[in-house]
Image 1 (cartoon, helix red, strand yellow):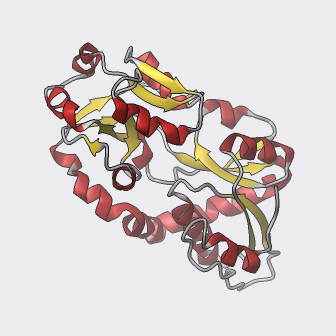
Image 2 (image 1 turned 60 degrees about the horizontal axis):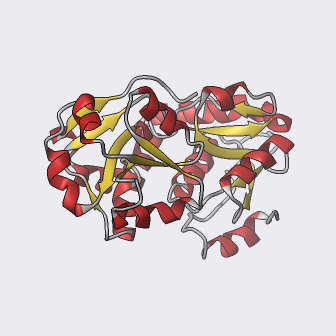
Length: 278
């Protein structure tokens, strides 16, 4: 574990993830800066989330000091958040996280529900099978198995729907090769529309399924350590302002718009999965 001051962090993080320059918000009042020790993951989302946070705070003229913590497994980052070693992290909103005393949910859906819209990464040879699916029951009858990381809340939604699934206990990144191999008891990966195109480019042995769109209620949210609970109303106000002014929509479009458009969501068969992650 290590903490990096903001400017040192910028140069160090260039090798980790391409983030915008972290200029502090211009203060227009005597408000004390928010001291934010933020965990970031190399999952393709960090750039958008940090930019949304920083530019939203700038809208309300709230100064902030951002310190990034990186290169730590996600599960340990949640533990660090509960202990107060970091004071802000982002992740899928769940009832379980929202009810924990050690962490404080910031009430805002950070991707406007896009992460709950799922497109599949599949083996090219299976495209014809998926092309005939018109319902959740049809998908169930294929007996094809979805892959998730161990303990992911999305797996509970698949299980509730009666869809076969596999939870991968080893490092998540090895599951792409397992799907491609075709003999490892996992056949497809449901991925959010903000991430699937990028992952397909990184794993050319798999392709984006072109027929279906699966959706369920869910989104990412910011979580604060209990020691930073006083920041919640400030960050929530900033995020509301980002929605009102159109900033949030613009940042989503800039970060994900081209990839989402390429998926052709309007022409896909939409399969609704009920329930929200626990």
